[in-house]
Length: 436
Image (cartoon, rainbow, N blue to C red; front, side, top):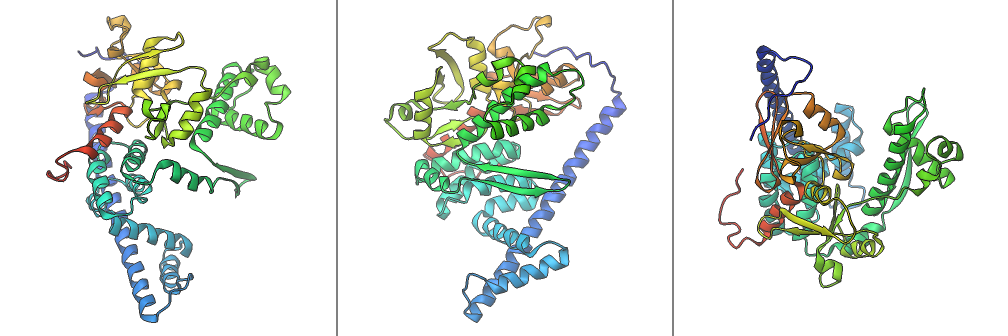
C-alpha cells in the first residue's frame, strides 16, 4: 500500500532530484575515503607502538613510564601538532583494533564502516577477553554495523557483548560504580562543563525529569523569552542543583507547583525470570542498553504502573500488550515496539514522540498499530512537509523512502537486539561465512 505524494509547499525539479542523488553518491564516496584514511592511520599508529615495544624489550625497560612509547608518540605529535598524550591514547586504541578486532578492522579498511561504528564495536567488545568470544561477537555484530548508525549500533553491541560475556553484569556494574564521579572542566568565553558519571538509570531519569520541566516552561514561556529547549533545560538543571527545586520566580511564572510534581519516566524492559528472581538476565534501559537485573528489580518494586509485553519467540517482535492500570493500549504497544523515533538514525525515545498515521487518516489510513509509528516532532513535520515516504511491512518493519528514491528498511530496536542475541545460540555457528 502506498501513499499519495505529499503537498510540500515547495517544488523539486527532476534536475534537482538527479543532482541530489549524485551528491548523495559523492558524499558516500567521501565517507568511504575518510574511513579508509582513518584505518590507514590506525595501522600506522599500531605499527609505531609495536616499534616502541620492541625497543623496550631490547632495553629491558618495563617501567610504567614506557619511555620509548612516549618518545615515538612525541615524535608523531610534534609533527602533526597534536599532544603526545592524545597520540598515546590513539596508539593504544589502534593496537586494540588491529590486533583484537581483525574482522572489524578489515571492514574499516574497506571504508564500509565509519570510525564511529568502529568505536561503538570496541567500546562494547573490548571487555571480551578471549579470541573465540571476540570472533563470535564480530561475526554477529558486523552484518548489523553496515546497516545501522553508530548510535543504534552501540546499543545493540552492548547487549550482544552482555549476552556473550561470562562475567555477570551485576559484578561489572559494581566495579564500574567505583568510578562514579562529578567533574568540572573549563570552557572558553566564561563557560564551564559539569560531568556526572553514575548508574545509567539515574542519569537517564535525571535527564528525563529536567526535560519534562523544560518542556513545560517552553510551552508556556512569556513574550520576549526566546530561549531554546536546550537552554531552558540547562537553566532548570542549574536551579535544581543549587536550590533543590526550581526557584520561586520560575515556578510562579510557569505553572505554580506543577513543575515540582513532575517525576522522571524511564522505560526498562525486564525478562520475567529476572523480575521474579528466578534468573539474572540483564534488563534493558531504552536509549542506553543492558542494566543489572537487581537494579531493574528495585525499580520494579517502586513502579506505579506496569506493562506486560508479549513477544514472538521466533522473531522478538511484539505481538500484544496488557496492563494492570487503564491506559491507551495502542500507544502502550507502539512505545514498547518502537522504543525510538522510527526515522532512520533518530534516537529520540518513543515516550517523547508523536503517533503518526503512515497512510494519512484523511486518505483512509486506519488507526491501527499496523498503520501507526512513533516519529519525533521534527521528523513528523518533515514527513508531512516533504516527499519522504513510509511503508509498513510485517513485524513492525518500516520502509523509509527518500525523495530521490532510496529505500531504507528500518526494524524496531527490540527486534534488532533480539536477532543479534539469537545468533549466539545457533547450532551451526561458524559453518557459514558472515553475510557482509
